[in-house]
Length: 459
Image (cartoon, rainbow, N blue to C red):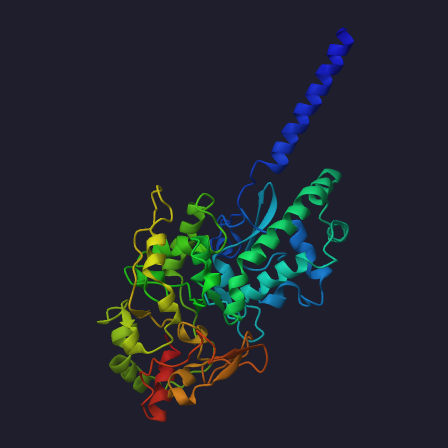
């Protein structure tokens, strides 16, 4: 009898130990990725977006399992790598049950120019195609090659060191659940089929929120696609109307809404990490123009800027930080039209009951007047990225390109913008892609336009 109880005690102890190990391995969350250096933290730190992220072990195998779909690995979709780094800039990993991939602020706010390996901090990610990345994740999940055997074999070749317990968990729980989840993601994203493709450097800033609020974007064709903005020198934006359509004037809410759009939840938001990035961005300098500037034209260009542009785009200008009515600016109205009173009401519920509950959103009547610091690397231009260069922006609408390629890093220092011979074709005739409006300066003689461009290079 004593032996029986002793054996029972041993069995119970083993079960309890196993449950404790399982809790530590698969229930208890891991520590967020954080770095002492502010810039490293901006590039690789966690903001809480991994909570529903793709399983890291599986994510690492995908480019090798599907090389024809991702011939350059994750760089195929515009992610940038630094020498010696395993993860792309803007990607973090944290354990939520299992290690998961998440995005951070640097995902959409870092870029490169020409073939230079230098990462331009805070610049719009002009070659990143998040929609193509999402399509890749969805489509590979239904490919016959997407099997537990293939994934675990590739993970072993990667040296991920998956133990036998992990193998069982991934084979019978993680991978089947991942397939089911991605089927749901595919169904939820069917609204994208009725909109033009985003292409590199852009994102739909409205319809995912409409989906979140159960506003059924699949039942209409409203377009919310905008260019990624810059993220530097944020101190001069304090109190300005933010987002492309000027619908919020709180930097904190702007930052939190971006983190939520990037994958964080209201409960997973890492406020301390986000505030670190926000504090850094207040005084982060705009990148200096790296090419030659014709200094003989700059004084004349500055005079034109002060007379024609400063009232809207220079801090302290009479209309700086305000939204110019759509009737006046004349640019594509789709993004503005998407932000309805119903959507506004729903935004007021974000963070309900929390100290940071959203309260600064509004319905505006146009597009926001922004500062032009670092404008040289913020191409393509206008809120929807429909004009490739500053030279084209200052040209009459009829002379602006109807089609052009996006997604390359080839820079034209004369026209000031990225000029691609291949990539993703952008068609300004598609819904939400209109390149009209913002006619300021287009009536100037060519010599004055060129002088203005030289000055803009220096901002």
